[in-house]
Length: 213
Length: 262
Image (cartoon, rainbow over all chains, first blue to last red; front, side):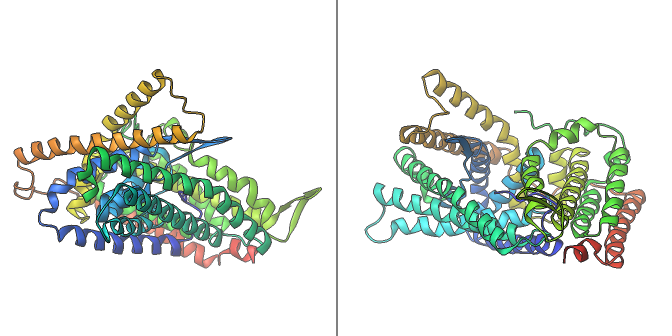
């Protein structure tokens, strides 16, 4: 789900950067409202690195395998740090492995990062009414993963297919949208399941992390 | 994990000597100008300019070839589909498969723009150490929180990557089969991810204590380490003029590719 350089026109890549600057500014403003924002930087940074590394874990989905996106989990655990974390992670992925690109960094950050902020708000709902429980952590973890990946897939498909520098006929475009959407359904559910399992695991082993960075 | 991006930063070329802040501004402007191009003649000029500046950078060809490995899969999907799905003017047909002019032109446009942007991006990142580039963007005004996070994340990427490899080796030694899908396998992989996160979180607590002991957050603002000279400024002006030239040239030629596509 990384759009490479060269596909999108300047108007879209420029708008992506503008939206990313605004969202980063908003996230950092929220982070700075904390009592000592510096205290959380090492935690957020190491979790950023860990998320980056965890995305290398391949899940077998016969006949192929998929790697994890984890933006729902990132939003759930990192809160407002999730957006800067994703921006940094995407920058590293672009320069080290050629996933994504420099001109599309803003667009890709919005595709991955904006849903992570929504996932953060969803995951916070687990404390609503009667406090937190293992079942609620798992359920809202699943929902965070499914919603974040689902929105990312939708944004990716729409941005990609509506900005190709050639007109694709309506039937082919609709077929491509359906094919891409159907191909991503197992990934969306795997992301949700992994997010649920990881959040429950962390709740059992180190519940403090779930209080947010 | 060999990141490989800093492998050739100690070479000597005008791009290696260029002030990192000016280099970021200049080359980012250039890649955005590339993404504006839609005229095939300007595309040729862009390709020639890219090859020329890659030659000036003295980076070896193998450095860029390695970078094409992963993105080429995505590009391959576009190259294999777009010429057959997009457009009305059929150039050749073989049974139900038809090669279409508009799709073919769009594919050439995408592939060339992609390659040129990737190469210029690699000149930007391959001629200055990544840590210096992060310091340079901090100096250009990105928030301290972002710069600190990027520096720390980069510092620990390799170590956490090693942790993951060790954990995966232990799992395999205990009989875990990564290539078989099962609910239990999914749970094990989730626990692997969770362990990695918890281990990193715990490590961050001792890192924070060590950082505070060394004066993190207390030190006076450092003097700017970048001292650009006139030559750096001249190169920046030249690159921006080249970028502007591409955009003006494309506008003057009237986006011939897009005309063909309509």
